[in-house]
Image: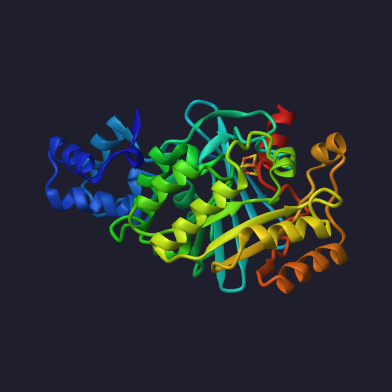
Length: 347
Ligand code: SF4
């Protein structure tokens, strides 16, 4: 059965009418799906029981189901969602003061294969549909305690968002739409490992979302060691990011996952300063969140705090704006792809 989250509003309204409902009842059904985020037709209390039953005979509300919830001590909550075809994806809720950020996935697995990432260990299985992307928001929202809301969305989970724009752009539209989930575009950030042609297409989308680029290194040879599938030269990626800023007026964030001895040396910082240049941007340093299986196999290490501080200082002295991400949920499977990896491993 088709999930209603995969349908356009027009298709939902038409289905309701076909089943004998009135247009206003179709709009009520849409509100239950997107505003209230109900997971069961029975919860649509102002919709006639006959219509609810008829809808339930033809459709499901959602395609995904929560398979596992992993709560970290610091409040981070990681959700593993089962998809209708037996695959699974992760999304992560990260509370921080008044903010709650949700990190969502766009693919099952990932083709980019960054050396430090669990999601890329087994390649990509398939793209998520638009409905499966939006459902992560609906499901995660349902996991929040009363009075708490998702304030920020980052498309930074499993997968490379730029390789699934056909589903991501309509999904973001739905998440942003005031008649959908209604989250402001300024609160939505899409992170890419750098696909200049697709970044152009993303730049043409309306409204203007925030863009983050996972750079990791400014030197092409080093970057290919960290991101083995990287094809585009760093200068082309930076040029596309600069064009994004020019077109959208949105400052780009460059993400750098730091690995001790690999890309946290003074020369690596120097290369970043030279390459990123003077256009407004922020460099977000992320000391690697170790994944046991990867650390053992590839000899990777999280850098010691003094190395991270020295790296950040070098960038700041070079004129760059720098933030260092505070680790959350490092205690239990909080890094990208780990919960899925461990669940796959347990089966
Ligand atoms: S870090 Fe992101 S882009 Fe790299 S393999 Fe993992 S999911 Fe893919």
